[in-house]
Image 1 (tube, rainbow, N blue to C red):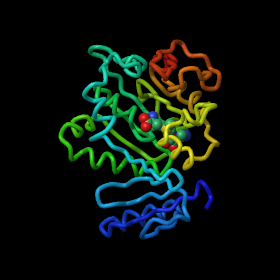
Image 2: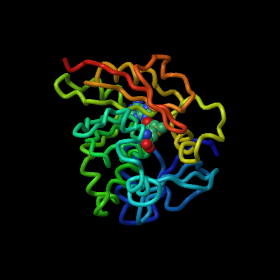
Image 3: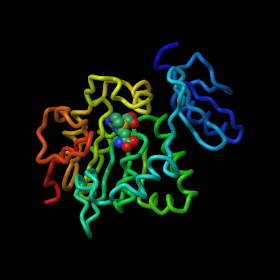
Image 4: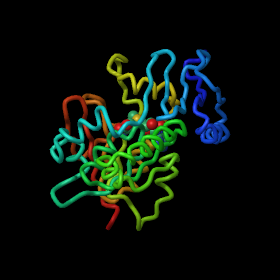
Length: 258
Ligand SMILES: C[S@@+](CC[C@H](N)C(=O)[O-])C[C@H]1O[C@@H](n2cnc3c(N)ncnc32)[C@H](O)[C@@H]1O
């Protein structure tokens, strides 16, 4: 078994068509039950879609309704959170944010819960399937649905191509980047959900180019999430940084809207 081999598992007949459409699009094999031959298995189950990691014997899915995000929605600290300050959220000022590395949408959901309009881009069809499924489930929960109204669009695309296609009249106020490989030396520091994403996604990411393209595209600022002591992305020094316990948000101010 290759540590990055991926398959689709569909155990719910009602979702067979969806699973096969994804298989045609991605070229991934579809099985009707889990198999130890694949390291990662995108499982279409009756109540959710999840990505199961055979080696870690655990799975991830996008969950807005319960768990950490629900807790943070209620007790998260509102506009005082570092991420909120980093995107420039103030009383009466809720910038719209293009999150070009949507992932499991946790950061996007925090910003949406504070009233920002979110536009999401995710390159991986597997992760994008998790996002679509999480949004679908979230929309059937009243409190969540209210926040998810702030998710204006979500697309499966490469962010660099997407940003290049934005015309100068529709620039997002803020572009948010949470790169995949933040130069962590100790793998113990990488949480299990990130370990799963790292197994799924190629190491050859164009993180530095994400930043340079974003600096040309955003109207007001670009925010890059980094581990507290990591070097700046692409060694491009930020105008300012806002830190929380383990995370630093590097803020690059731009003036592309004038
Ligand atoms: C560290 S995760 C983001 C986690 C996210 N901030 C959250 O709160 O769940 C990085 C994500 O960015 C995506 N990504 C990396 N490069 C990308 C690109 N060029 N275009 C679009 N998505 C990209 C990866 O596929 C991965 O899902």
